[in-house]
Image (tube, rainbow, N blue to C red; front, side, top):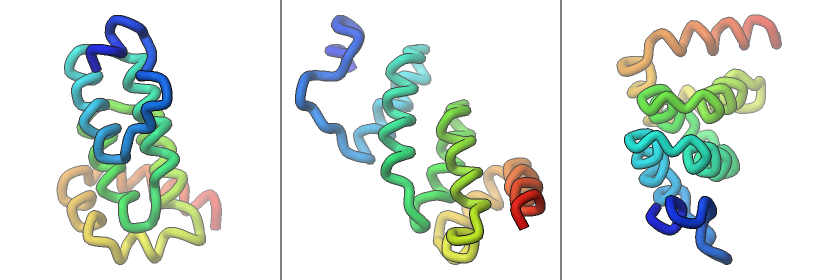
Length: 113
């Protein structure tokens, strides 16, 4: 994060992991580093799958990351992924921690079916 603060970019050749991107996004949210937040959100979007989508969506809501939230809502609401995401462990957590986002998902599903 310090490298980003001073240089406004990630270290050259530094490919951050999904978990590191989550930690950096939390720090970027806390210190209002919007550009770093976008970089981390893009990295997280690239790593979404059926097992991680619901938990990542809850994470995006909790940290006010609109880019990541919108991507996850679209991913979860897709015909190919909906059943698999609903079967994941993170979906129960999403339902209990972010019930308002479920309405968004249902509206998107309704439009696509």
